[in-house]
Every structure is written in C-alpha cells, then in structure tokens.
Length: 273
Image (cartoon, rainbow, N blue to C red; front, side, top):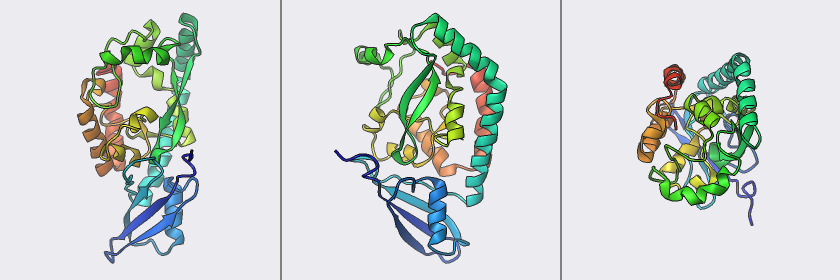
C-alpha cells in the first residue's frame, strides 16, 4: 500500500501582477507543501518581485480532487506565523495554572489520561497528532459506532448535543474551550495556526467532496469564522461556507477580527457542545 509520503506530488502555479503571466513549478519532496518551502521554491525559480498569488495543486490526498492553497503576499505569511508564535506563547504563559488544574481534574475524576491525542488532518492533507484535554470517558472512541444514529449534523462530522460519553468535568471544559488549550503547543510546532479551519479527522476527509477538500488548503486553526458564528449550532454546509469564506478573504486584519470575536464566544460558551 502506498504511504501518504510516497504519494506526495504537487504543482505550484504562480501569477504575476505586473506581467499577467502564469507558470507552474513541479515539486515532489517531503515538506514542499509548507508555505515556507513553497515560497523558497518559487524564489529559486526566478524573480518574484511581481508575484501576487500562487496556487498549490496537490495529489497527496488519496482519491481526492486537487487542493488549492492561496498564498498571499509573503509579508502576510511571515506576519501570520509571528502572530501565531507570540499569541500561543503568551496564552500558554497566562493559562498554565488553568491547564494544570484542568489536567488534575480530568485525571482525578475519570479513568484515563489527562491528555487526549488524536490524529487530525492539516495543510495539504498532512496528518499530525492533535492534543486536547480529555473530555470524554476513556472508551469514547469504541462507543462511537453505537451512537451513530444520534448524530445531529448532516455530512461527515459527528456531533451530539448531549453526548453521553462526555464526563461532568468534560462538559465544563468543552463549554469554555479549555479542552483545546493544549493545541497551543500544536501552534508552536507549526501543525496549526491561531486562526484557520478546525482540523478534521482522517475518516471525515475521506468523505469530503472536492469543494469540502478546499478546507485542507490552509493550515488548520484554533479558531475560525465557524467558532464565532455558533459552532455546533450551525449545519455542516454553512460550516464549510464559512471556512471557504475565510480562505478566500484571509488577511491579517481578518485574523485579528476573528480572534477578537473569539473572546466573547469562549466566555459565553455559545454553540459549544
């Protein structure tokens, strides 16, 4: 069976704002779909002073349509990464007492580890280990098939408002997004960004349509338009609409706006299940 790494092959299509010309660059090596490597590859191929945008067409996701990644100006890319590092570091420093308390409560009130590790899908279909405080019983994944008929959302996602697998402590930390604080370390590692579509499960991406796979065209994030628009209270199709809206309009000001809106959304626990 071919591995994900063996299947990786991509094409960078660049467009010049000055000349109106377009060209493609073939890439096929591990790590090439990161924005840093994309920018270096484009720079190695020639003058990028007129570069306005580029698209990455990838076939690393088995049996999928192409994935497009809009690369904004290099200044935005660098600014976004700097913002991620600064915000993640500050939030870790400010929230470490909460994280320690949450870990202790989770560990002492139910069987199982405090940290729940789960494989998620990131930029370009790459898989990474995502961290959360465990909010469900230890055997939650084994019980999922038995609860499939209770799923309240259309599409490949699985959501139940009163999920019986959630522990009492888990209910509280999910409501106020405390369970997601460990993902700040995913941001530091570069697996995630502060702002971006929420990272899906591999089983979910296997059922994606070509339109839905566009969510994988950018780095996943801690918060997004979906997060500040009702979260689990909105249908899957609207969720996708919001993610694609962000991808098409992403900018540093948009990121700042989403982060500012996230604060009241977290405090009120709106849409959190």
